Amino acid sequence: MSQKSTECASQPPSLGDIVDQAHEAVIERPVEVWDKNPKIETKDLLTIETAVALVYNEVSHAVMMVSPIELEEFALGFSLSEGIVSSADEIYEITTKRLDQGIEVSLTISNQCFARLKERRRSLLGRTGCGICGAESLQQIRPPVKKVVSDFFLSHNAIDQATRSLADHQVLQALTGAFHGAAWCDTAGSIVQVCEDIGRHNALDKLIGKLHLTSQLERGEKGFLLISSRASYEILQKSAMANFGFVVAMSAPTSMAIDIAIRTDITLVGFARHDRHVCYTNADRLF
Image 1 (spheres, rainbow, N blue to C red):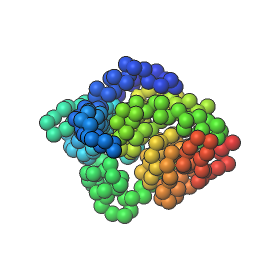
Image 2: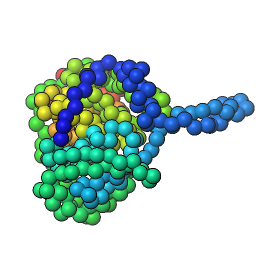
Image 3: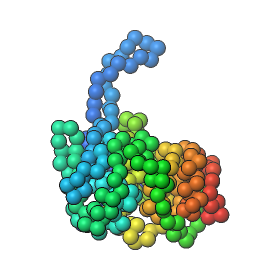
């Protein structure tokens, strides 16, 4: 699959980027506002929510509710973080088709990957909620994940800097108040890439896909994940699959997320605020 070159996003998005993203992901609707005064009729910007079907080798595998932007990145990231493919090279083509009911994203993957996918016999409808809906047994909730390979340390100052600047990079969240953000940050705390979606898992999948399309993970660039949401089971599961050694969440982690972080050697930080955050695992990698 062809790769893209993308500019570093260490600076907040430009006005042109804001207009392009808003046009694809946001819609205007009339509303009535009550603010201790007679009602005010005005207009509000709302996020567009779309059903996206992921189809592998002409067989539908999952239907997700997604913000209809960066769908190629989403499909690639989902395929990698779910273990459907082991590398981007095992995806030969990604195409999108808009239908009346939603958007169909079709992926052509290797025969070996497709055979492995069929063996899993999983239905993932409704995935955006708990992340395990449709699993056929309890054993499928904890699939085996290798420990991450991470050989560097991260400063508390870098975490604080990234946390302070995330809001400036979340264009769609600023417009609607309905988007989660997933950001890849360098070891100095500068935000390199940001993806937004109505679902926190979707935002992370888009980020993983974008990092692969820009070859940043393949080049071994060191950094950490920053998410605007809580750190749930699936966030850590996907992070481990992507070999993210540091996960920083602006909200709380769950107990299962901490368990996965321990099993995979991820340094997990929660409640990231200005001048304060809490480390739950592998604190010896922070300075």
